[in-house]
Length: 100
Image 1 (cartoon, rainbow, N blue to C red):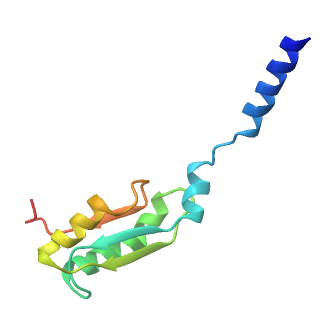
Image 2 (cartoon, rainbow, N blue to C red):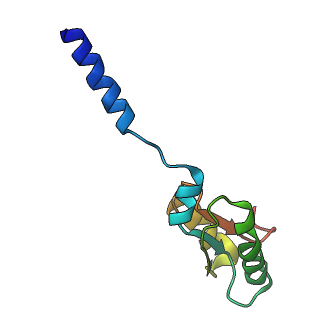
């Protein structure tokens, strides 16, 4: 009898845990696009174009926020994305092709 109660508790504990789907995650979490140039530049326009159309291809159609981060030719944005931005798939970066 004790064995049955232990396994029943385990089954109930496992049944209570539920992971959210990709669609649920992106519906409640905004997507950030960090652009490594100032507002109004070519890369900013490209970032806004990507932001407008990428939501069609992501389940949950998240809100997209474009954030220009000028400084050091895109190094500021690259360092921010690498060191600070969340590593959960909600941060995208657009920097100069010359930045290696």
